[in-house]
Length: 168
Image (cartoon, rainbow, N blue to C red; front, side, top):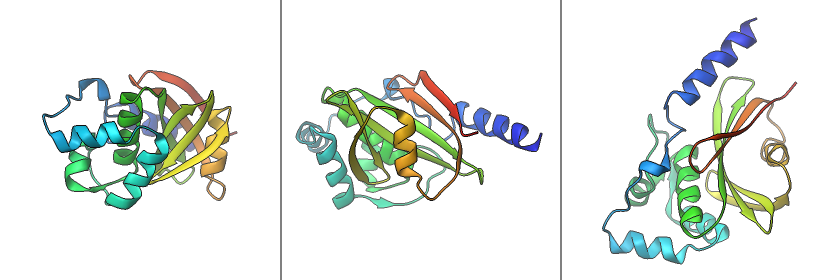
């Protein structure tokens, strides 16, 4: 019963607009030529991942940064990096997804997923993983080899739920 109640609380927390569910449809491109040039140059998920590794450092935030805020501060957490990657890849024509993962210890984590050649690849924090899999569950299994996840939720670019899976 405790696990069910905890799962409901976590689901409500994740879907109630907490850090992790920033809706990119409300993001307005700033009039910053450096930012706009960077978006144009990062035209593949691999380039996006390389850019993040070279330019960003990990720092926890209470709320999710916009892609522009992350660009300006160069510091963010897993969700900030996922939102950044999803936005830029989508801008450059890629189909993208955002995965919220709940671990058994109650901690949350976020991934950006990119569709390339009809297969899924992802970025986890700063790094890009070209694993070329066919399911979201394969991404979770690859990303969490040593951690036990209890649930994940997949959102499309517009934050519509695409898939929910429990690890039973």
